[in-house]
Length: 332
Image (cartoon, rainbow, N blue to C red; front, side, top):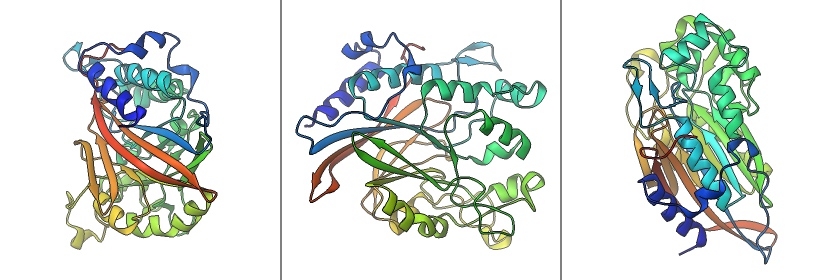
């Protein structure tokens, strides 16, 4: 068992309320960032940890604004886990699979009633040092100007390889981002459910087009492969199949296309799913590792990749995934 797998076992125990040795060294907070990591002693084997949240829907502090009571979830609890993992390994990437800016009175107040210069959810994600987020369908609920205002304050990109400026072949968001950890270039492809074309028609019609996830991913795949050593996808879309609308009548592509993406791009190492609010600790579809962190920051998805360098190229030799629950984790 790799040292990284052992650390994940320890973190799982911590998430269940047990002691974690590295937690004591995390008093400096999440704002320190993850950095680029360091090469292994031999220079030919590294371990990279990719962390993911999804469907946070405004849950930052563990507080239920509807019932005025504490919640056993939220980004403040995620932050404690992220700190612990970063203390154990510098080669960490943090991503989100969308639906951040709508979902509770906190989101509504700062998005609509008293719009903040930088939305508090974005402030929190900047503090946690996120590397990328997929744009979710609920990001469009309060209109494109509200989304643009939130994105302007983000220190990380919102990705959407299948969201195009209406009537053009230009994406409205970057299709992917490449980050480097421990000398390995990790390509992050971002995608979102096409259902926004229906659910937020009043806000997006004539402005944005939401095209097929698989076709859009294939379009940018050669460029992503060339720019990176290993590739993952962060998508606001579930494993599938099925949609909450009549696809035949609307002409809108499938809502949940995670499984179809895995089958179409077997070169992917991992997919961080979203949208369906399910917790998927680990699954494999067409040889691609898939995971999902549920909703409301109730869990943190963790993908561990071990890579070795051979003939000038990095190859994944071991990988695993899990979902760490935030229940019982002390909030930051």
